[in-house]
Length: 86
Image (cartoon, rainbow, N blue to C red):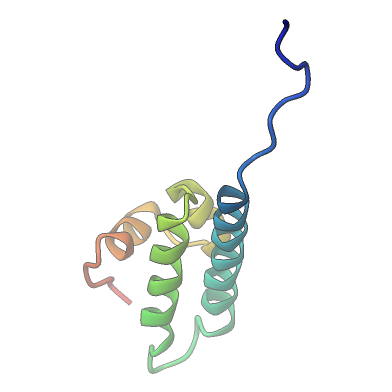
């Protein structure tokens, strides 16, 4: 008997995780653009947490750089839980 020709569906958990990662990436981008000029930077911790959460859900570093407009080094520091220069 031959194998079915249709591909198997993606597991639900993977779909939810990918969706959450994309949502958190957009959230990090919005936080960066809305509060970028604020003199006191309470948004930086929130943005970094959103980037770390998106990264843990499968979003790669390049997507985070594009979404936030930050440098690769800043995103790398945020993902490593090191203090950023902001």
